[in-house]
Length: 399
Image (cartoon, rainbow, N blue to C red; front, side):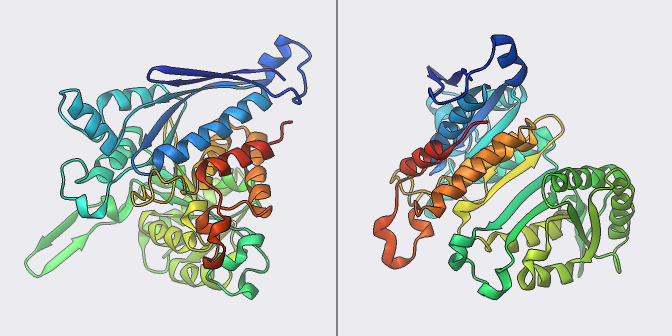
């Protein structure tokens, strides 16, 4: 199946043709019917962002070749990189230029790297409030209301998980769906004298979005949704339950269960294998997704997605790691798996998403690992960032 892949950066265009081993299409018409054409905004950002992004785009380009798609990637500055670029151009420095927002608005999806600088330089204008201005600015502009964070323990890397082998023996593959722009974080915060209060408020529409996303995601997985709340105390949690039950009617093939947040915090440590998709409000999701993030053993394995009304954004869960930037040792797997999530949730290309995930797993299972996935005495066996990306590309298989 032949394809032309256009990778567009500010002044660069790269084109690649498919490998000769790919199956041939019966006709150009058939190719058009099967393939899709998508424009993807690429915001590599700071630190290790650019180098892991290169590997993710390398993998996506190979996927496009194998499956007959056309992916056009357009780079735009964000974070400290955007501040430096706008300052150098004689413009008012900003972490999120209007041109970047405009480009994202014209795209079918956003691939985001990471933003932020060294801890000891946070007082400098380039880095002060960098993450807040860049990330929250994009979330607000595109109403990225639902955050998806998968947490998977690979059996061959189970020794990296902090839990006992007996606890994770049945396997761990959890997806946390967190409502991202409502709840107590966005309610009224006020203090008067020796009193203070924070208001948690939700409406039906604000709840329905993450719940629907959770059910849709579960349909592609093990078909189980756990809504986490505090319905024995909070009226907002009771509303969450009402909405979840209403949405469930449209998904008869998906199981629905409810769980109090305090119990969920225990169960995600004691019986993580019992969960498939967890859906919850903002603060509960903030806490539970962080608890789940330690299970795989490295943030380098943790992708995420933030889903909006018109466009979705995909990024690794880890930070910019400026201390290792430019050394070629960063793990690109989280960025690559973020691309797989883009295939699944933005483009509805489940086979392509699964192909990326399968390739990643096969590479790591073969012992091709970056340093963060190796124990102290084995660090000399670590592959570089680019070598990991090359290995995943080599392991990709087409339809």
